[in-house]
Image (cartoon, rainbow, N blue to C red; front, top):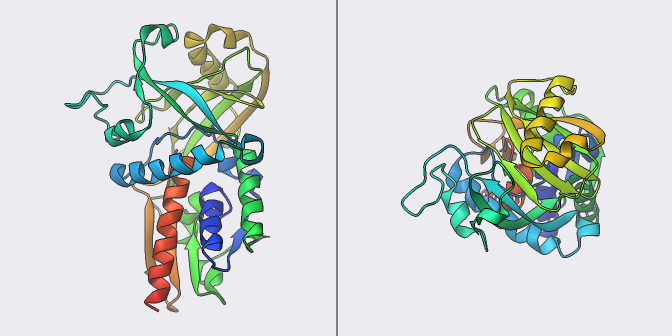
Length: 325
């Protein structure tokens, strides 16, 4: 297994619990990955193809909802919130015509928001109670679960898939943005996300107004460590350094809906690089030496949301590949 973010660790857990010997090799510790700074809302965002993304997301919704029964251990909680209406049209069933209508149709309890449930400045939206994941806690939980199933984690860089294949029957490539050089796959590129952590002035529900095609988004996510304010989606931007002007604009956008955050004390600034691709690559191939290689990367802004669904697919592909060896 190459890659120790949420995609790699979740895939590793599913494989190890199915009885496979698993070794995760990762350049960065889990706490230093993009996954560790993700907002953690279980909702598909900037991920394609849509049909598969919805299927993977619904599986993750099921698993994370179960894990929410142990929030201190797993980092997952069920939190009510509002997804504001986007600029797009609706389909014949009144669902957003953005390719994710099947998600809206399948999420338990999802409904149109009533006027009294909307923050000032929001004309309409959807209400749901969904998993909101504290990602550093979730990553530590996944590592413990992997080790309990007999897996191991090795901290070192991997120069090539051939190197990763040395001495193993199958390689699973969950290298995220690293796949750009490792595969190599030039279609993989960063979508930079900046966010601001502030002291929570009393916001108990999540809120997001995120146009999947916009470079600027608005979201407010109450986490145990503070209120997460976001965000940005800058295509092709590689910098991991927070921009003070961008941070100021993020706070201002969130304050349009929650005026109290304008006065909240800033605790931290964070920047992550989402590993984007025109479509997720979740497929198997044979390396030149015949080793089965399953690729699982390019999840954009939906890593935690699709992680468990993609992990199930990885298990199937590994089984099929080894059976055909």
